[in-house]
Image (cartoon, rainbow, N blue to C red; front, side, top):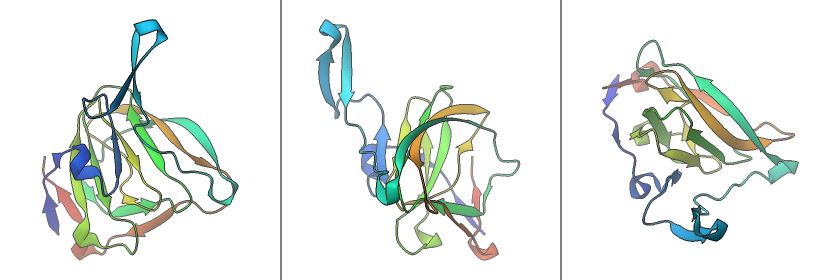
Length: 163
């Protein structure tokens, strides 16, 4: 079994997998609402149209794993997926590149409670890894077709998460 220590979630480090959703100086900023708000524009490109899909907004309430062990990864071949925390609590993000699953390429990130993540279509990821019960706004694909593939790691590839 391999151990991973979470690395900080930054736009640069997460770029191979998607986008980090956060207000930052690097984002395009537009003054809106007669100067009473700033729009951090186009932080991610929603990609859900394949096979007649449509965008859907959901709320997920996640609970922590009983043991910090990663055993199953999933991907969504027909659409991207976005998670925005609503509870303000930090959480973990485990991802691997799109394409044939390679457990040696799994990366683990520590996300702050103000950072969301957007997975590109086909990127392998673990389901929500919260450190305490948390709510997330989720934007993903609804529609026909099989849009969730799961893979179970061989016991030698399972990952223990250092905290």
